Length: 406
Image (tube, rainbow, N blue to C red; front, side, top):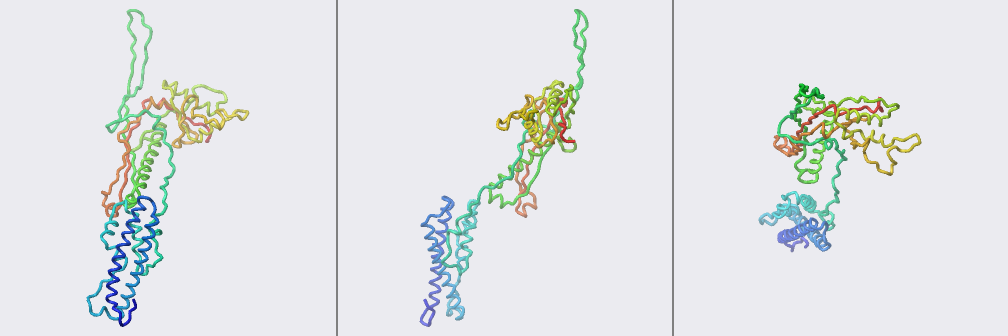
């Protein structure tokens, strides 16, 4: 409608305001319907898209016409003495609507809808007929979060399991056995043998770490919480495996198997012995300690040396590459782990000469009790476990140098 002398711009302004409210309500209704279809079906129906585009076009045209009249009225010095007419932009109409407030204050399930509605309603009065619901409501094709690779933990499975409710494991360890058993004549005095014990103690140790995370990140990406949880657990397992093998026992460290093991010393002499022969001699050394070995731990690189060993004719000693040789050597299962140094091997009676006691299984807790966390909307995630390692017979573990590294 042209603004000439015969026109009534104030009436047109009011009529356009009423029309803008009606069109904006219709636009929000289609937007809600579009959000529901995306949530339920992952895409918009053709009918919903077409009707949404049509509503947005009408909304843009009405809003532009309303702004034009407002400017001309302002140049004329008001609205003819009538009460001021409140002019709301497209954004004001939609954002202040109660249904929109309910949508934008929703829980995590509507987080993506909140972002997409903001894209639609943030346009100014210059929003034109080219706007499209399909470009603002269709979410990005986001794929699953990818975590870093993890090392497989194996040492715990070798050791006999146990549980405790105490802060330390105490056990009597045989120190000296004097055996005087002998044939005895009738009526003669029987010989007396003797045995002494030492009291040993394995304190329960704590392995723990924490991580900070944004509360919003955890709320908006549930999979992120799962990855953090698994990564923290993995961190404990990683530290645990190193402690079980090589813990020094000082301070808060576990006293591991290797520091308590007996150094390899060949019980017999074998001419031209190879590193594979030395591993067999280490098995013999454990057997002579009266606790036959039930496992062998070495670095993956050293196990590869075993698998690649050839005879003088170039034939593989442990089967060809296509045969998938089981990880066994001299009748014992071989555990390959990077937790042990290259060029080293641990042979022992893991199930009978040592035991692992869990005081508290792995626990992952989330807290915002720290005042700094509360103020910054952060959470602290803590992973923790408590355990003790008792080595009943240190002589049953043989720590060997394979001779590859000088």
